[in-house]
Figure 1 (cartoon, rainbow, N blue to C red):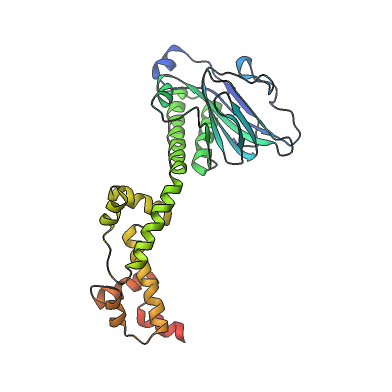
Figure 2: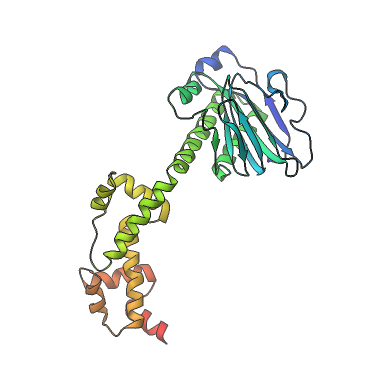
Length: 294
């Protein structure tokens, strides 16, 4: 199933589905071209709505916009701009309306779900009706969850509702993670930037990542995870890479020996420096100096 397809599925649910605690009610994908009327026709009963009247659903829905832009308006938030890659949550019993801009249209995917577990998302504060928009959702894994749901409901194998509930729960978990990263992005950037400054200042010495984490008031495991998320390397590996880059500069700009450079940058031995340099640069310091200069 692709985002260009027009697909709608409204599902009957039974007692055993509801007892499971989480079940999918609706699923769809529609491409609205620029200038097209919206919403498109063919939605049954309470799912249909107009911009003038809006709508109140009896289920949760997550709507993902993969192309185009438009607006979402709810009773609690007022009007919000929706851009390509944004997703938004719709909550049961809460009035809302949304539509693409006429000049851009948009491509939307949505999944509706209910159940006692779904209600816990709201009651436990994982998703908040005051902040329904989740940015940067157009990711391979998010699209993959939708594709899996489309495939499942096209074929309807035995127990497909329970299988769908697992996929949808994975989708919700990933959306929560994306939301948390977005919420903490500014503070995360600041923390990593400060950590890098400490490393630059102490490049000729050593660092203690646990002490840096303590200065930020967080555990080392969280500091390491957040740092790696931003840079792709653990704090210690990043610090060692800085030392290697500084050693390259010294090898090319000065006449210091390899041993002198190693000790000036705080390496415990010339042997360790040589081994690490070769590991990171693909050649020994001596070969690097001779090859680049020549």
